[in-house]
Image 1 (cartoon, chains in turn purple, cyan):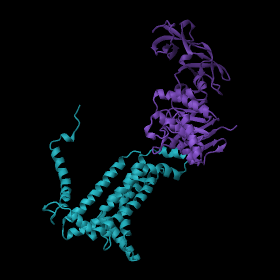
Image 2 (cartoon, each protein chain N blue to C red):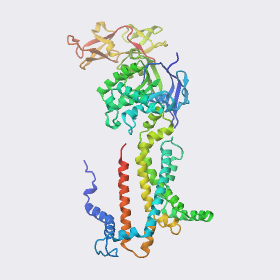
Image 3 (cartoon, chains in turn purple, cyan):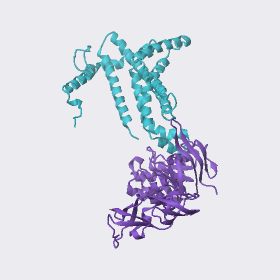
Image 4 (spheres, each protein chain N blue to C red):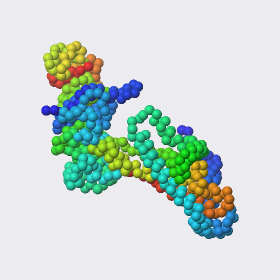
Length: 359
Length: 266
């Protein structure tokens, strides 16, 4: 089967002095019916990639195909993809219904069909009461729904979403995340979603491509990316992480044994296709580790700070090797840790939890 | 913290402001008042009357000059606005090109070159064409007015275009609208206030012109302003005041409409 969108060595360079490499040889295959997220900080090239798929930017080199068909020479109005813009870009001189029907009208669909589809779309995004409103008379969340319905109405094979939730407040954003996921499942359309919000990416995506400085750092499912970040940037950008110095003792495929600064040896995971030797850095999520009496410790140290967060408590440990370590522990009413600041203490985590990071 | 400089607190501020406004508006006010004078003097008040308005209305030369002024202003504003729309699109909707600021300066040339220079240049240029073709109609005046009206139409249209969200046009293209339909369905409907504002400004500027018209016109092609200038050289009656007052009324109406349109949000 050919991928819905296949990106091969796609490159975008903006001329100037110095020239800016917005995207450096990116390659991705996005499957049909997939909720695929491009995640990264601003300036990482995620929006550039999305705009090239839409046809608003021309690649400097590389190929871009859709179901095997080359998109390179198609202008935006001939590509069977639709975009939900960050600013929504609703047409201010048209009503809600006219906005939603615009794409179908441009495709030359019969009036009756347009009317019916527009009705269905308004139903889908729960905006049926607002058909004849001007776009200036509805709230931000409603505008968001109209933008979505407008992009979905022509039934594109692929829907592009450029940070569509960033203008909404927290509560509405949460609701819309679930709503988007529902719409994607109901319509079966491939969604390519751009965001800088890691939580949003983890919540909604089937797969995520983490990007930084114009390159794709890692592609994988949310769990995969979170539990097994392949490199320091990914581990750092998504969630909180402890970076633990270690040394590879033995490795075979993705399994490895590493020696910690305390001299203890524990099983860890090696990134796919890597066979690293010598000194490495291990990533351990704060909630994947626990605190324990010094005698049972993988890594011994002193408890330097206890920070209470309501749902959980963070224990800051100053390890004997000079590095810091944070353990996150969920709070339960019937449990107390029994440790206090200044106590000698240990950190432990299960075999296979630590992830060796690529340099 | 140092106090902010506030010009309104300067000694004499109110006096200067008051004197300025009196000097600006007193002459116009007097002109309007004396247009209703029953006597023949423009300086001695002899009672209220509409006679000079009636006289101007019945004056065949005034009628002809008015019609001529309106024809020229109509065509000059229509043509200059059309050209201004094209120029504004070319300078805002294309990728930045080399010499863009030079093009901008050239479009706005009539704002910078002294009018008298343009007038003399056009006089000589059109004289050559008149000799060569024998044509002496209104077209020369329409062309000349079109030329100096372009920047006045261009600036508000360009301002409107640069203020417009580019994503709207991209969204339309994304929704399968080819470039020309993007223009007719998205750009143009939002550009209308700018176009109307530009056209009105051009119309008023054309209606008001003396210098270039005086140099370019052939015999018997007086516009309202050049007719009035000619009258002043002979007998001055409040008829001139009456015509001026009507012109003032038209201009004020247009400027108010222009301001309202410029502020209009889509």
